Every structure is written in C-alpha cells, then in structure tokens.
Length: 126
Image (cartoon, rainbow, N blue to C red; front, side, top):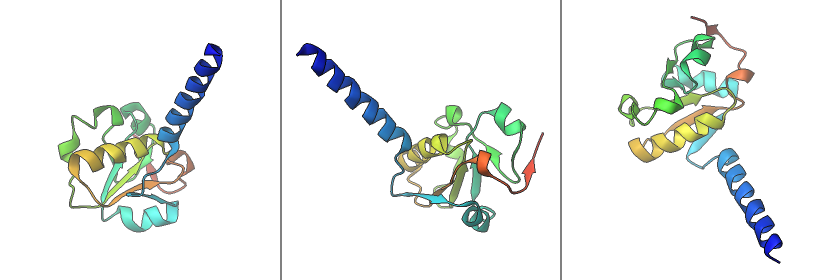
C-alpha cells in the first residue's frame, strides 16, 4: 500500500513540473514568426538566452538579458512598452514572462513560438 502512495506522489510531482514548464499563461501571447516580425521593432526585444548563445547568433536589434540575470536586471524592462521575448525553444521565455509580469506589472508580453531555433529571419553574430 505504501508503494502505491509513493508512485502516486511521484506521478503527481512529475505532472506538476511538466505542466509548469509547458503551460502558457493567458497574459503571454505566443506569436508566429510573421506576427513577431510585425511588432518587435516597436517593442523591447529581449533574448533571454545565456551570453554564449546570444553571441552565437541573435535576432537583429535584440538585447541580451539572460534568464539567470533577469531578477537582478528587471528594472531595465519598461512596463509601459510591449515586451517581445525569445529563447532557444520557448521554455525560458515563458519563465521570463512570468517574472516580468510579477515584478514589473507589464501587460503586453509576447514570445516567439518555437524560439530562436525556428527563426528564419535576419540574425547577427558577434
């Protein structure tokens, strides 16, 4: 009987963590590349990948605020202006959106569907 409880608990924990990782909240808009391109030039374009990933190639005009530094650099993000986020696949940008929403009360937060690995537009390499 105790074994079943442990299995149920383990399954519940795995389900919870998977849900948190892949759930997209209502305040975060997931945009296709075409939709992303239409709006990112008038917004704050933020790459939340680590600096070595950013240096390997990034969307032209983006600035790098890695997710690992976001809490320390949160004041660099203006809450009154649209925020366009991207990472490698979309998972970190969802986490970044949650932090930005909570700490800066930003309303207009968007992220790139599929992340940078799906991007076919112009890029810049350092």
